[in-house]
Image (cartoon, rainbow, N blue to C red):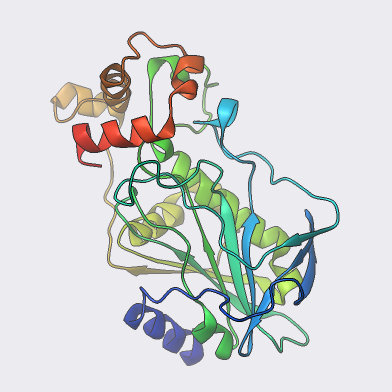
Length: 297
């Protein structure tokens, strides 16, 4: 791995809370890139081109809540990509913080990227899988010739949830419950499909993350669903152990199975014996609030 990339990683670790907004960059004109969904116009900040708030999957709202992320939407004309998209619903930022339409990806690229084929660093934010967002600045990476990517992913009870009514919808072998992790995989697939348009090399993708992001990196390395999506991985704190099956947990009486936790959460907001439709009609704010009270998460 190049010393330039390691320098950039170290710089981010030292200034991880320094979010980079476009600031004085022009909002209506800027660098344009054509991707699979349509054309986007970004902003210029110093020697970096910023492309923020690009949807990488369908909005997980209404009937798509608690489902694997669907295909990213396309659009006519040119989409403005100078501002971060909404954060995913989470506690700690006031009532109703965030929006379920939150599956956005952000790219910071060197302004001078003639020839392309630049290495790509995909950042996965921390926050105990219950808070945080992809609002991190990547100009240090861009200065060293690395394309920086960050994303939002579903959090709390919207990112990890099971319930008998939802389980009845699942086909055998179909991934479910870990929706936030499925979002991360969808973002990595988006990178494979689109990063070349920003000058990146899809065969030179490194994922890295801190805390819950570091744990995510471990899960992504272990998952067969990520084969071919990245070449390198860096964990900056966070760890992942081997997790026994739900049946093993039940037999040992260690913790309630995940579906039981889902029932407890639904009951706490008045949804006893709820159908899948009733669960999906519940407000995101009530789910996040109840989850925090019941499970400290």
